[in-house]
Amino acid sequence: MISISNAPHYKWDDNCDGWHLVKTDNLSVIQERVPSGASEVRHFHNHAEQFFFVLSGLATIEVDGVVHQLKPQQGIHVAAGVPHQLSNQQQEDLVFVVTSTPPSHGDRVEAV
Image (cartoon, rainbow, N blue to C red; front, side, top):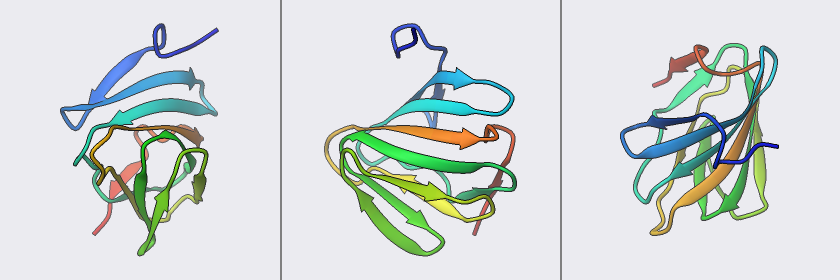
């Protein structure tokens, strides 16, 4: 059994949290918490495709120039090689799960 109470935890962008729920050579499942006003840098992955699924809050995610807003229980697939940027433009925390195959760590390229 795994949950954020016993999963390996890491910080990103100073105030965002991630918990590795699954971390194998072929699959990564991470629950993340993004506070109000925080965002990741626009980037793409050469090999990893990803699926973002919102648990609570509202995600704003730009995918290849198109901006999407995801509510709880909504998700979006991002293919490998496609630039994207996730942000929380709301007042409450954003909590979501991102599934990557293969794992995306070490496969991130900043995009313009």
